[in-house]
Length: 315
Image (cartoon, rainbow, N blue to C red):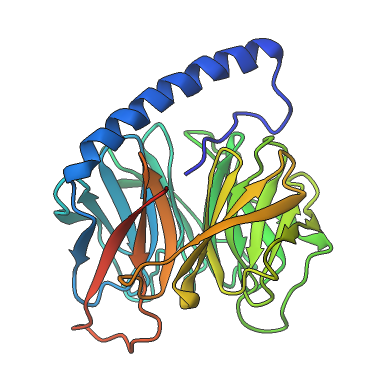
């Protein structure tokens, strides 16, 4: 999970220096987590029939995972793998992309339900619910500036809602420029921020392209891939500094790219595979690990179908 800037504009020198100190503090915290997680499980089960899709991790040792089956959210202690439901599901509900903010608010994409929800993880109560009028499949989310940004896989539009307690409401930003929208099915999927904090990165799953998107205008430009022909089946995105991890779900693969600061180009560094992958969809970072949920899209879902989450080292 990348650190998100508080403003889409370039920071001042004072902010940069302050950010450097903050980054050093974060690095120390990440180092502590890295040392501790050597004994933590690298795989843990989820309830049968859960159908996981999204995962988010904050600074603490807890992961939040969303269900495609009913929109419920489960919290797991990464030190033990033990978990519990913190948001109950409902018929017709779904929880796909998740992002946890520093204030404990969890932003939840609603998938086919077309909803956007905000959960206070300190009280396990919803603080806001949004229902875009043009929603089709609200897929993934990233925190950028003072807002949360969501992709819609079935329409060329981004949705954005305020972070925290602000209530200025839901906005829509149409995608344009070089964006390519499929006539049917999934297009936009995972979303991240660029290293320079000026734009968003969106993966278009079926055509296997990454796009740099101006959040103010929705203008999209294709990111040039070097060393890789495409990122077909690209799903969740995780950026750590200038490194972008692309989860390619049905390929059971994580592709690792080096980005330039503006994310105009992405150069293939390596790929990560693991025999435990079973169509992983999204990932979240803690310390030197990526945690992923196995959606098992190639396995017919039933109430008895088993699911799990796995962790792989970043290096």
